[in-house]
Image (cartoon, rainbow, N blue to C red; front, top):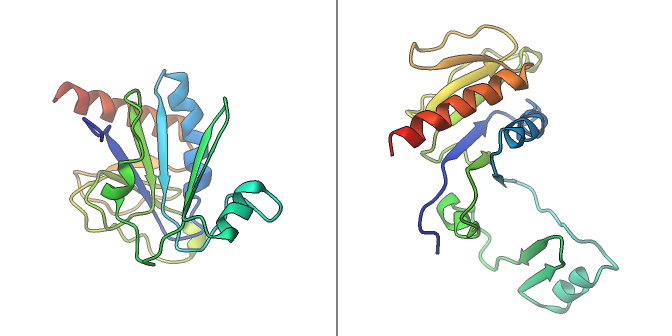
Length: 177
């Protein structure tokens, strides 16, 4: 069991906004600052990380409810859920047992009460509506949005500036602990 959960930072937006693209641009920038980053992604779709012909796939197809694949380089745990319900973020956090994680980025889980950055792109052709969420730290957009004074505006096309914002935010919360 985790003794202390590292800080969480969610990225929320409609599908097609570029959450994954932005997060994959930010992770190396945060790692350059010496941070150890973990990520949890919520998916509404069925997915496979293994495929027909691989041993792990064959074990699952044979009926194993969990398959752990381990090498000197990485570990992957594949677990079949009997009860098909929406995942709960707190339950998923128990899988991050490493004590050296500095920050867990969360893609999705928009209804969880965690600090968040909301993404918006004008190409979505819908108005920039800021979510009503006490944990909203910033909105990252390609156009100015009408945002509350307590919410920061970030340019979604400047991952370096967003990474700097995250580092400053982390320093602030680490100071307050």
